[in-house]
Image 1 (cartoon, rainbow, N blue to C red):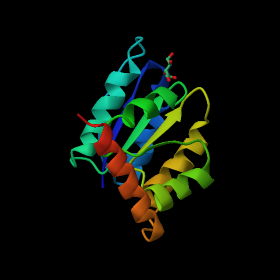
Image 2: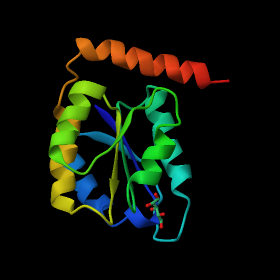
Image 3: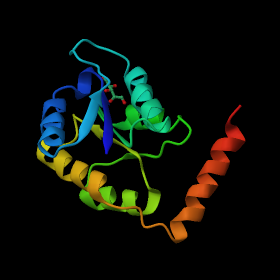
Length: 149
Ligand code: RB5
């Protein structure tokens, strides 16, 4: 499984913990930045990760900003992305099982590193349940198409 990761200046402190987890567990990943603590625009980095996942080059995306909110908003603008803004393990499991979410967004100012890793593990290992959820995802795709130019 190939993972795209990205952050802004407010999400950079959690990144080493995330990278350590991915490397320890043998995941292939690419870090789309940002790479410094200089103030930057979360939308640029969120879009890079979302586009990398939507293109099919990467299987999942993990985003970190101050709250996780800006990153999730921008990621969900990219057709094909289902980004979960998620800070608890119940939602992490459920969003994979029910929403087949392909990107997750965290807020470094909200969550501890240990909990983020528990959530990442669920996000990367929980299967989509399919069944009744398939038609719901199809409705989301139709809505995306309706508003695409
Ligand atoms: C940066 O200060 C902050 O606005 C950003 O990281 C994020 O939380 C936006 O939603």
